[in-house]
Image (cartoon, rainbow, N blue to C red):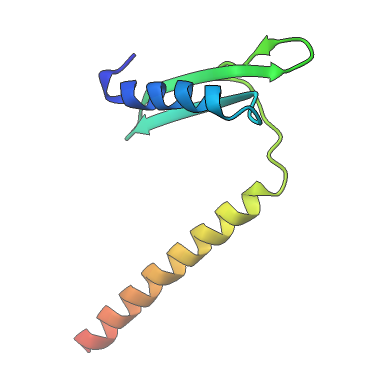
Length: 90
């Protein structure tokens, strides 16, 4: 494992022992176009004990709505900043 992600791994392992409501998770850390870490933790199915791996798919339901809203807000803020710079330059 890349030494840069050792703290992330330790944090997740500690959090998984404390957060009983989360049976499993998967994480990918990317630096540019290089995958630094791809790891699964816990179980994907509490009934069977099937472990989570880096390729486990998760049903995330409406969580994508907040990610999309945040991305749109960030793009709008950037556009306003660019428009302000252009207006000042004129």
